[in-house]
Length: 405
Image (cartoon, rainbow, N blue to C red; front, side):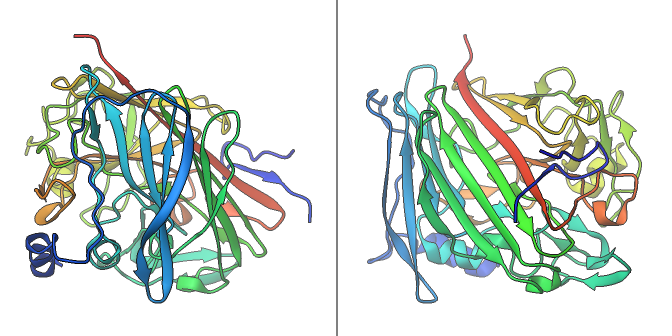
């Protein structure tokens, strides 16, 4: 097994729109639309772990399936083959009452036409690339500009907009679903045929484990992540600004006015970006004395995790989030060097989920584990280059629990 040094991608050698959204929200219960209820339900009854599937709809002639993973405690995760998307995550509060803690939609039509990356896999390159350009082996590549003036989350049609092949890979750890696809050479103008997969495993420790893998036949760049929007009080319950957040990260990457990192690794101490000690998410989010808060309309930045330099295999505890009202907690562990913390700044009320309530600014947060934004153009950042013969591997775990009163 060959592992990259601290400057390179984790790998191993292998053999061989607003108006439309508002209208959709108002008519979401129309006849014939498949509904997946995810509101609060009574306490789950522990039972046997398992996995099942059923149709979720058809998109451009392709059938989309929804898989339900259930552990022995009654925790339940639903995953779509479209975008390898986490559609719902049902977990208990301190009273044992279940609720969906992720934002999402009821129908494939909504995911295909208006989703702001709800719960999906992001690739080929997660986060932003400045001006949509990067150089690789002396050649300059131009990716579509879909977040002026930059590329965001892979381009016009990233991995979130494809149906994936599904495989049941359940084992001793619990029910597990592998979703895979080949991204052909030249897709969105990225070089190389990239064979990738994401595996979701639900353990009896109430952990949702996400394992990513990718190989290429030509030198390329890869930065995969998941864009789940979390609200530990429950989907549709309103603001998360009272959630209590703690990060194991003493630095972050400041951005310019287009949200591209400046290249600096700035200390968080004495700034609104200091979550080294637990505090409410919203405590400093309106601090207009911070240029970075103003630029991001809140938090939309990459934190540099305080992990051991060069360690690309150990699961590092990156963040812990607690909802004081319900008692639900979530701990994020990852093998990645960075984590994008996004405070739902661009949720504008134009769409809503199974609760029938509109999603507005600050109604959810995302913890997107990753290599740093714009790494292909930032030589001092950990590399996202993947070579033929190497395998990209990355793991993130979301561990759910309940805090004592």
